[in-house]
Length: 164
Image 1 (cartoon, rainbow, N blue to C red):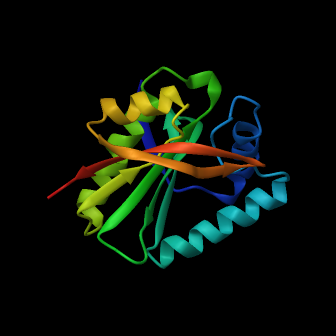
Image 2 (image 1 turned 180 degrees about the vertical axis):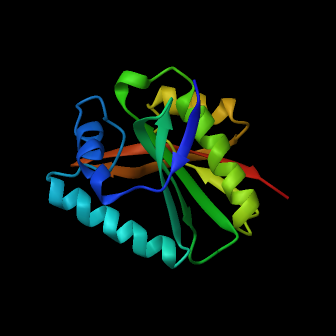
């Protein structure tokens, strides 16, 4: 399966809303309630990309929009970034998230002066933890009650890769 990125568009809001509102997205904090809310989020992402503090991409698998991936630069320590990704539940277990991590790393190496990449999936998100391990990240610890989704706090595992 060919996985590639493109810049997200405001017109992608409906697709993102569809993916992110599915009940299987237990561990992803973004839960847009309306199309307008997602459109506003995409507009904000364009602004953050111009400021070079975040980079977000639409994930395409064989040309079909199936998810999103992004990079957030640590503002206090700008040589560190966190990456994240999500894939439509219909496309899980097809290597798309793993390929997205590889594409994010390639973008970072070619475009941003980063020394350390971090990923912090929820501890109970077994699929995402497998993606991170398969991508060569090392577990550094568990962060208690790090991720809040709705009224529930989740422990997250901190994984990292040092580039140089």
